[in-house]
Length: 423
Image 1 (cartoon, rainbow, N blue to C red):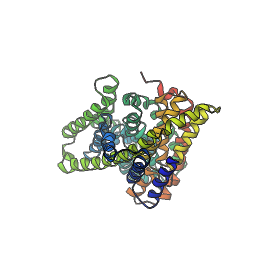
Image 2: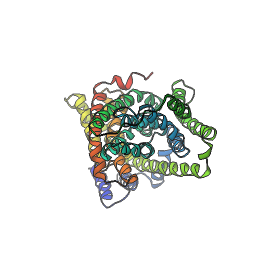
Image 3: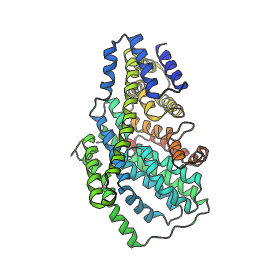
């Protein structure tokens, strides 16, 4: 009854147009004050507790590194090499778009940043070569979500902070699933693109390819430095995020002095602060909500109930993933994580599933939620950035959304993808 009251308050506030963070805060506050009896001072302190985490410090650093890479021009040089290398092949620009999202996702950790940065540079070139608007925008909207599976990932950081597992292990675990999903998207992109009447991009000379490689090499090295440092134990993920920021500033100052301006740096700082504020304030409201559920022992009761069921554990897991996909049609990924993880995580662990494996398939479901209408964030980002109708982006994303769902099903069935690299 208590959780029903909380959900009614939460949904009612959303219906009248209240922001998600405010809806979570008010519904969570009503529960802890009205049913748990928690003092008001303790309720307020929950906001500080929610963000007082060493792991969460990695989020603003990684976001800043990705924004600096874009605003200071190093991302453009990196993408130039990829398009020179693959653009002349049949369907090559669509494959280059996916690969660009893979690499930029490894730089920023943000789906929205990846969609905007890669889309702004790749989509105009695809349209010039005869790719349809639907296909061009659909592939970027979907591939941009790879920034959540390819480490570093904001969603992985949030999941690790909520479940108290090693975020470095989550990063390592996401490498093979991320590359696997990227490969499926590339295959899908080539098949879809080859059905269109395309112009073939002029083949770049070996000299141009090598030139673009060397000027893009400093940016290409950043994921290797960050992940290699974490894997080798040289620094923690949070320290790696700070190293990434310093590294981007240094290579931009040395190799791209023209765009290394105060204006561009300020733009990166402001955009990073805005995104970080949204994430943190969502976290505060969600922690308040989940605190009420924990005090009322909702997760414990669900776990005890599930343990008495005679249905197979995999069926319960599929039911949970189905809830993720259903929520993804109406909510952004971060609120879904904040609301559901405290409830479903103990249940899934009681079924004997590996926490790393569950984290990977959870992130895969969050990727799908980014491109499922009517509230797919990546769809809206592409639509708004290019001033294109949302229906156009949705139609173009359907083949790639099917590929994402298929990839997620394989990740569920084969835990090896998620755990093979984890020490």
